[in-house]
Length: 334
Image 1 (tube, rainbow, N blue to C red):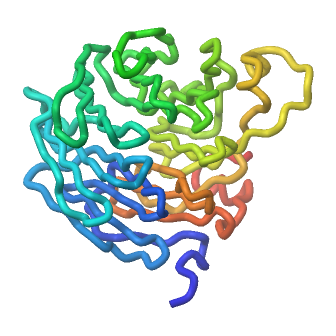
Image 2 (cartoon, rainbow, N blue to C red):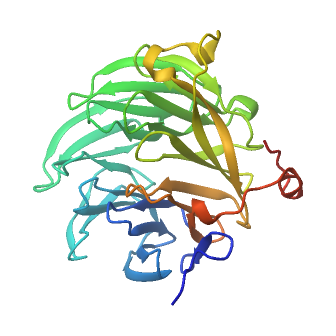
Image 3 (cartoon, helix red, strand yellow):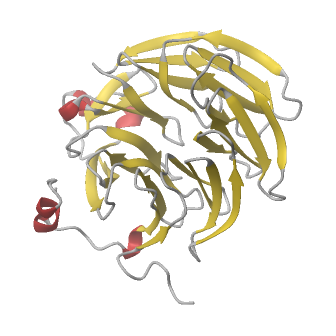
């Protein structure tokens, strides 16, 4: 059927009325959540291979790093888990009571445990038995991410704080006064050397931190509105961000030239180079709510917008944006 990415480097995936989260399975299949459904896509064909539907709004999503499970958080504190291979439901339960939202969810690397979080509470569950293993309180949370080695959890809050918890005990190790407003996204790099945080701080809404000493390395400027999601490439050298400004930005870490001073030179091994925007992905007609890098190292990025359109982008085929193109979309480049 030809190359679905050949025109503009992307393929549209239609079916949702709103896409609030998009995540990849290790085999390159894409999962999206929005409205009252979760959809499993083959990005190479642009077709939905499976649709799961709910009675309430489906609001959060995660895929296990080992490719075994898909989980979603549904309004009123519910969690549903599906086997990614058989595509059958394997569990569902009320993870959080008195909760008018879908819990944030993320699996540990081997799928043994799954974390759910809502309002002020984090809970650690056995994926196999759905037994509650541990629970602890934190700040009023707005985002979370577990490091790839499953020893650290970053929690973004409604007041700009980012709390670092150790796992699996949940003890709070450090609190970063990262931003002045809600922290909409947090993401560890796959090599765990960096943490990136995004908030409604306008010019300083996207920050890179070294995890060794928890020093701020760099403020990434370019988006003209709040950044809502962050994704890293498997080798930690690239990053994608999406924003209320209807664009995605692809960033690359540039090798350090040596010397230097200031925040960008702090942090030792974690700061081997600074980050620079290398392209802007444009064309979404509404706020871009979610983005992710494919873990199969094939240079595929996914995005989802408030108008219900999901996209899979092959970065090698996306035209390089020009200053004139960027200006036409109300943003600046470089």
